[in-house]
Length: 247
Image (tube, rainbow, N blue to C red; front, top):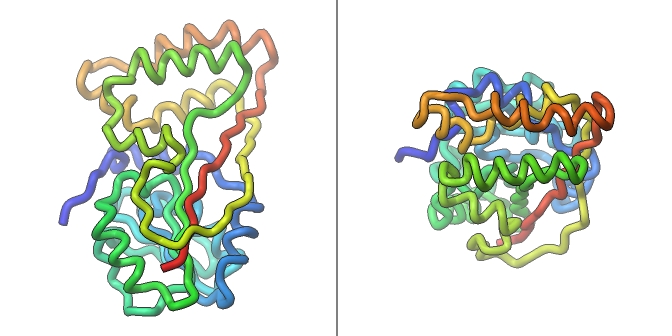
């Protein structure tokens, strides 16, 4: 079975610039299961979520269909990485306490993925999916980034992006819903970090490939004046949107 691979070609950039998730997210996820023996983080990418989960679970298995992503994954005690698709989980029935997918579930074949989740989860296990959209920085910066998102690279977003834009509320989720807290991730970034992060967007990569030019060059020229007027380092905030459930 193939998978929608939008990131292997820039796995090193993904590992360098994708934001980490806040500790309170993992604290919450740890409350979902009575046992914390094995967590499975599917489409783990460079292992951000897997490493965070390892602070609470005895073992975390991070899987991804992209070997290039796994080559750039973070090493951490208690974390093992396996080249494996989310829809073809190579694990025993009733063997996993928690299944997670961070900023990835919108790419899946949902029927196949959810069937695998039901199979591998223990009876008291849980599934947690989360996503985030555009960050909030400052009104003058946000306006430029929003215009770039919709007007410049907008046509290059894959259709699955609609799930992210809706905070996963429109994504199929045939599980018993669990209440989730309000969690946001917040980082301090300079302009280089922002541009590096934007370079990991699948739409930016598709634009560059289709047109043979990098749209971030012009974006940087547009954003530099408004960025530098308020200081070199700014607070970058993303609200996290969670869907959590039990079989």
